[in-house]
Structure formats: C-alpha cells, structure tokens
Image: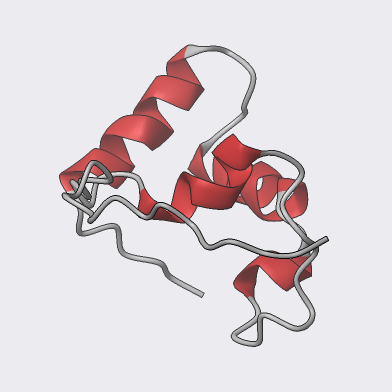
Length: 83
C-alpha cells in the first residue's frame, strides 16, 4: 500500500516526530498514531464512542473553528415556584 501525504502540515508533523528520535521511519509514526487512538474514535456512530473525560476533551473537536461563546443573551430572571 502506498500512502501519499498531500498536506504540508501533516508532513511537517511526521518530520518533527522523526527528528525527535522516537520513531524509525514515517511508517512507524503512522503505526504509533493508529495504535494510540481507539477504534471508537474513528467510528461514525457517536453511540460507540466513550464519553469525554473532561471539558477540554469534550470541546477538542471544535478547536480552530473560531466559535464565540460570549453571545448576547437576554437576562433570564427565572420564575417563581412554590415549595
């Protein structure tokens, strides 16, 4: 099997890992990456995925999307309830 890397940033990460000395070759970098991610991480169904362990992991897929969470919302004063 031949795999072609077309994104320069992917090639840069592979080269960085190779320079770190922890890998034999590019194939070893890919192998270690595949071994470190559980099969559920690549599954299309969210039912088989494990729940996030913390808030950082929960929002990790949103990195780089430039989402603004400080939206203007009307002040909710709540409602009265009888106890």
